[in-house]
Image (cartoon, rainbow, N blue to C red; front, side):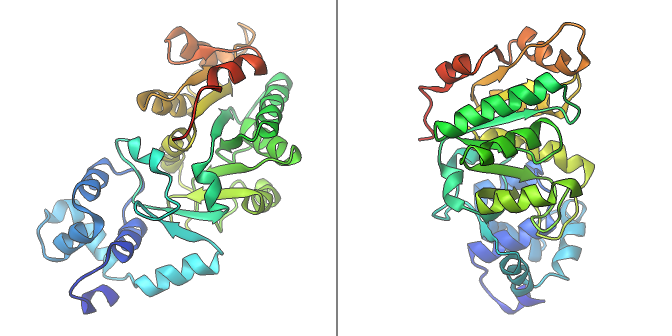
Amino acid sequence: MYIQTKTLIDEFESRLILFSVIEPGHAGWSAEIQSLGASRVLEGMLAGEYNPKSCGKILEKISHTNVDMLQSAVNASNAEFIYPGHSKWPAQIDQLSNPPIGLIVKGDLNCLNEKSIAIIGTREPSETGLRNSRSFSTRFAKHNWHIVSGGAIGIDSAAHSAALRAGGKTIAVIASGVEVDYPPVNSELFKKISAHGALVSEVMPHVRAQQNRFLTRNRLIAALSCATLVVEAAYRSGSLRTARDAAAIFRPVMAVPGPINSPTSEGCHRLIIERVAELVSSVSEVMELVKPISIK
């Protein structure tokens, strides 16, 4: 094992190793790494300082890990592994209670630190929802705002595609690795996003999507963005989780109302009723709410 040959493990290598073996969004390990640093946590694991129940499986994975192979996998994907302290690390993401150990980014690293808005919603949108997603995304892209979303079919894809057509940049935070096109139908869209924006992932490049990671990645969508706009969402939509994650770090949240008998608007109405989100009904209203916002 590569790491056993070194008496001191630097922060970059430690972050990459732990990134590859710890499930994204793990609150306990995130807090420990944020407090002590990845190098110290990894050394503590290897020295037996942690309860085997909490890190036994992690140590088993580490025993089969080679940091050179991990770095080669990232390089082969034309991506970059970034972490706190990296010159392109989006510092706004550290406001999360469980910030990521690191991120793998394929595309333009600079856009992670420029003004952006999350435009999110259901995978089964109405025609009105699709039109609204495209309209909001187009307008913001033309005002030099980057569009952040989750790369899913429906509202997400409409927002990404509209931003690209408007000549803007868009960021897709995905639940799989950057080399796994999920959903497969969006493979061409993902290529365009990596060329005119960025694909962002919290797992190694060839890791497949898992159901739990969709909710986990939602916090990254919220934290990368200056504000979040829910265009259309069902009562139990994952978009509500993103909205709550944004509100928890005091980012503006907005929701577009719909017909009272529309299941795909129930989530938006719920956010408005619970005062998680501001009701917005036009692009100009959203622009007015986000105008004073800066990423700095």
